[in-house]
Image (cartoon, rainbow, N blue to C red; front, top):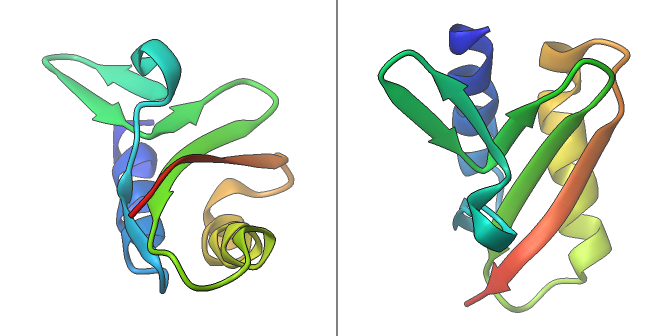
Length: 88
C-alpha cells in the first residue's frame, strides 16, 4: 500500500492546476505508513480520497475530473473522491 499512496500523490501533483496536496480538515486525508504520512491521499477499503490545493483560473469540477482520470489506472474500480482543500 505504501507504494500506491506515493504513486497516487505523484500522479496528482503532475496534474495541471494542482498546486499541492492538502491534508484536508484536521489533517484527516492521509495514508499512515510505518514512519511516515502521505498527506492528501487516503486509501480506504472501498474508496480513495484525495485533497488538493488548486491554482485559480479553471473550473474546479474540471480540475477534479483530471485528477480522477490521472489516478484511475492506479486505483482500479474504487471510487475517487476529490476535495478542494484550498485555492491559490
